[in-house]
View 1 (cartoon, rainbow over the protein chains, first blue to last red):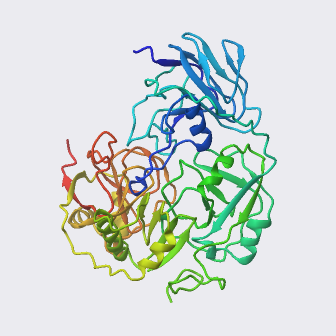
View 2 (view 1 turned 90 degrees about the vertical axis):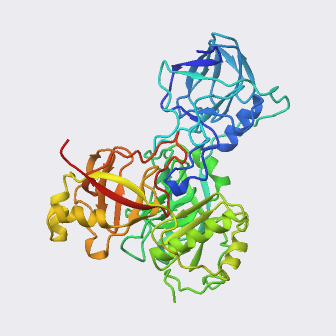
View 3 (view 1 turned 45 degrees about the vertical axis):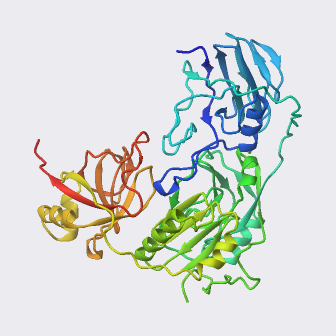
Length: 309
Length: 207
């Protein structure tokens, strides 16, 4: 084994290799996967001179510790956490030179959920369908880190960024999720849709990389029965029979049979990636682009419950 | 054809039948190959819909769609994938009872059917195969199995499927296939993709 590698001293609660995922394979049942907090992933890469496509580590709540086999420039972003090198404090959100043999420790998140560790050259595990992302739904990509595992690093790409000032995000009192209604909002009553935008929801501890589950008042359905399986986009608010919206994150199934009441645009999902269980959630209805004010579809004719006239 | 907006960059196009889904999907792939489709991230056919995601301007495509002339699918341009099956599944007798025929007749009918991959989902490489006529559609099992062995050939509703890996599942298991359905190191990784024709070829159950 080459020296360009690190070994895992403390894997933490759940640490996975992530990059920008494997889009374009949903028709084969392959989830996108990839870093849940994509801006934090890109920033970490930029700080160590990598392109945004290089693989980083995504930690969950408790961080992780690694012994570098070779001197490596490392940066930690995402959820703020204490960073140490052989026990000595090192900066969060900045390039850190870790000597060969030293232990880099990204401690528990002080707030937020997921930290990102980038290494000059990137984590160099075997790509699957063009991506190194671990996909926990379908088991593609590298397994979550285990203590003692050794992961290879690629060759450094270039000099790390010099002038990136990284703002230290504060705790988020409330998760705001703007959504565009549809495609199956007609499966819910007016009261059910009002519940979505006025109800007090919280992030459920059952959340994971597949979906952010919510606790709160159930949405009243206008229609019963099953929806034939249909394609599910990233950010879909899928509502299972218990009436509680699940926000589909990067490892979500590519098709599903429960109605999607709305879709949260991708740019709002990074905040969902950092929302700890118990965080209050507020859903904000955005102005839909596909309808005329009457609520009818434009330009194709069709009635409100989704059937052809 | 009824397009529904999906987020800022998607369209879900709802159709009246699986045949229309297949025809639209084929047309979309044809237009994509001709460079006549705007760039997009995903085209996901399903039971009654096609999802188009990652469009810069879904409004533009929405306006264009209404004018499309979608030719009905002409059968059988692509060669069929043949999947050898040992019809030894634990639910074969139950399916025979539901169809009101002998297990041998289940084998005969199932292997005489030409299937199509209507769509994929559930797991990488899992195709939902249509082709069985409506009277042969069977319900899922009341109690799903916690572990369905890899290669299980199974029925549920209008669909036949082959489990690409061991997983929980509630479909009726009628046989076993050794064919590798999903191998990310292979090109293409999925043996079955939407539109693929499939035939099951009975193998001797005794080894």
